[in-house]
Image (cartoon, rainbow, N blue to C red; front, side, top):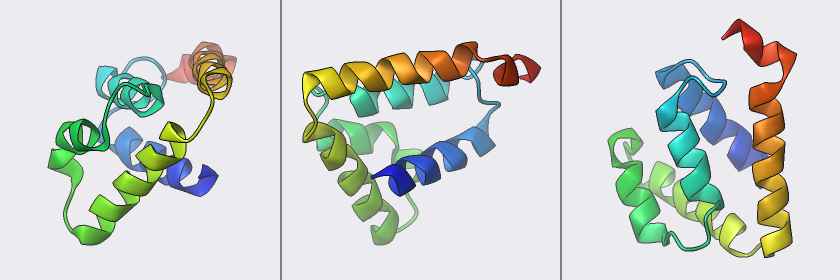
Length: 93
């Protein structure tokens, strides 16, 4: 799960500058964490980044990992992402 998240975040950060200055990245992360968003809706959000079946499968697997988490874990991921956005290392962006 960690590797998939790192790969998705790395790919999306190439599209725009990361660190709370990129609404696209923030939207994708919030949709990833949100258990109310289905895998179908999630794939529609990322459709422009999907080139092949391997990417589709990776996106499905990533979303499934988050759908299988408790509300407490998802809340902790939100807190973690906010800490990253607010960190001094992201001030450069």
